[in-house]
Length: 373
Image 1 (cartoon, rainbow, N blue to C red):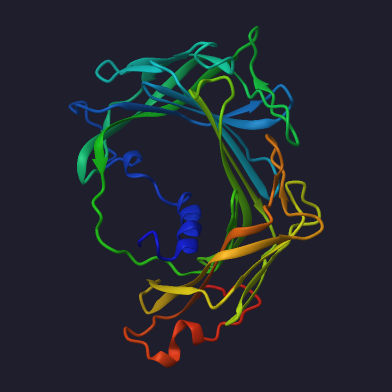
Image 2: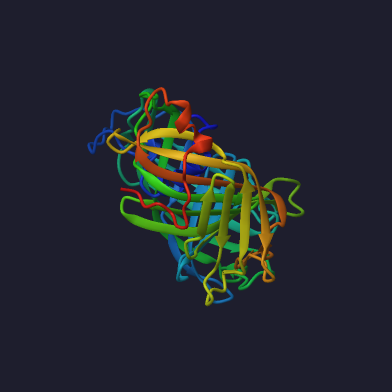
């Protein structure tokens, strides 16, 4: 599917697929390991998630990733009802990790100065099983389980937001790490494109406005409706060697969608009891929109995406606002720059539609999201 087609659907599908699809470099071609394997390419280390309690009493999960020139710490808050927040701090450190693929051991180290006072890492890594090959159509890759031990401390250095997360461990009492993980040696592993595939049928509405992304759709008989925000910060005083990636996803009621040949109006509301997202807004666009269709399901149906790329957002007296644990509240931006995609499911259109059934004349009024079959 090209980038220009089904823009909103593509974004929604990425969200669903992220929890369903295993990347090629992480899936073994065979459960049988082989000691004769000669893994090539740079090594990436990923730890399993660790339950931690921060200095401010927040119960989070910590996960570490490391390569030769980079180390990152991700903290995730999954304890909320109807929301999920994650922040990942990544630092350029050379070397952050060394790993001997023949001996099956190595280390991850980063000093306070290398992490710009965000923390200290001192870990050893030992392989616990032989390398296993990874299925690749081109290049090669191999993976192996490891045992990670040592100490770590990390300070989020963020005092704004609903509930600052504080730090994990301290200078006098660092956190003891004793966790399993895996290493992947990737030597250009890739999958050949087998040609266009048929996507499952998804019906719904997707809207965007700068940092905010809303989606409400039906997928495999289940309804999803949420507002997400994504952001990227260069960490201060790190000389661009440190960045933080932010993501917050909050469940919200399905928006009310009114679509006519004259335009589309999306009324976005939030739960009255939510602390994570408040207020409401209306997103509107004039015209019949642009339509593209894509086969879905068994192939007898198609998803038709009607998209408006020049929509306008208007806040209610209480502006639509997302409230993360870390960082400033994100207020929906008034004015242009918004987009709307309305995705419906129906019989696949004929190859040569007559002028009487052109997209601009096709009746499509709707007050609710059309459920997928």
